[in-house]
Amino acid sequence: MPIYEYLCPECNGKFQKLVRGFSDPPGLACPRCGGQQVRRAVSRFATLKSEDERIESLADPSTLSGLDESDPRSIARWAKKLGKELGEDAGEDWDAMVDEMLEEELGEGDDEEGEGPSRSKGKKGPDDLGWG
Image 1 (cartoon, rainbow, N blue to C red):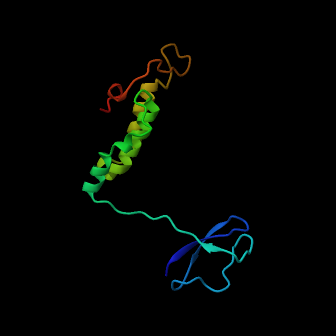
Image 2 (spheres, rainbow, N blue to C red):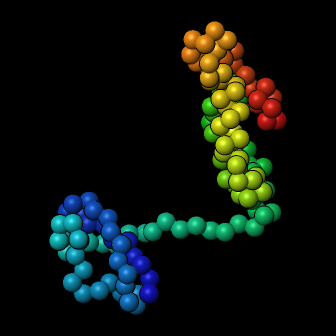
Image 3 (cartoon, one colour):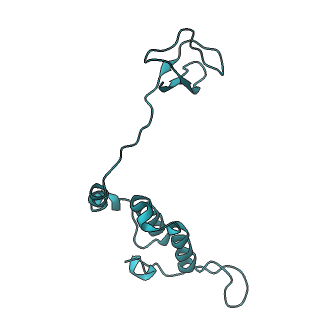
């Protein structure tokens, strides 16, 4: 039995319905407003990639679009995206490691005089973060 997603044009609501068979059930109505002009939506789906396909996709230059190598936060976002692509090969604590390195780079924490967070004044690239 498939689960279909529906959109209601009257209230802009979105809901799911478990349906027997492949046709919409009679009397289908929006649970929010009761509107009966609902239409089936195209659901999101995922495709599985082999390990070779995942590695190949990482070599695509478009994966570097929007990357500012002089901005540690941009590098961290890219590294987290990379970790998601690598899956368990990256390790369970990948995001935590990236966050820790970002905090170290930005100097978050107390400065030498104990007057609060200090910030890195110089812009650094991926080599300076120890990521490449």
